Length: 279
Image 1 (cartoon, helix red, strand yellow):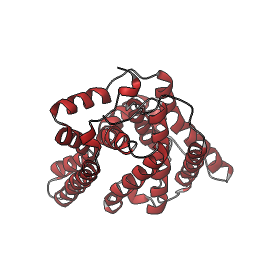
Image 2: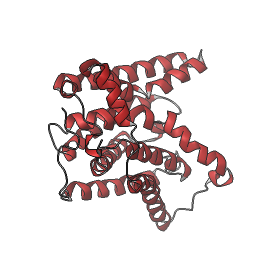
Image 3: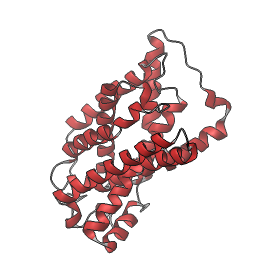
Image 4: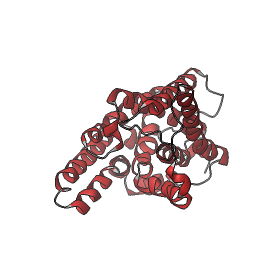
């Protein structure tokens, strides 16, 4: 199997009704489980927290359900196998891991140049826990729960109809709106953020994900690494907004917008077409 074959979908799973079903399922599952978890958490904290965690798996579960319902069990098994296929060049995995901290360190450098004090990094004193945090983020911090949906299903479904640029921008809008309930939940990272800045951040990030997905031949593994790296390093490098300052996050968002703009304006290399075509 070539990389160009990795994430093809059956034609029935790439129709407009299937795409709309996926989006509806992702929102209903995530928002429903999240609302239920938030309501019962004061009285049943363990169950409430479990439901809130489960809510983060809405996109991936919706992707699997959509492929299974519209394509059948055989298509679902094949799709899962292609999603977890490990035959991707190491350079894309390496780039996915190092680009986020590189952008964040640049943002911190500008932050310091503007007169701020160098932030403290508690993780320096807990290296084993910091390393373990990457695995925790992968499993329950967003990547595993979302990427099988946004990149594994929705990207190849949309790129049947449009180029990766437009698909990435549309996914960025849906992805950003999907996060909105987190802004009203106490204790979430988003509760410290300005909604417009977050939406711009996600939109720019979606372009980065879409470009990486396209260049890596439709592989889901770099997307999982990139998502993990973004979320984990943001905490370790003190990029997450706080009541004291949001400037590091604003600077990272600005760098993401510049990077996304450059990727959108850069012509594609000549390469095999129909990387994500739907059969």
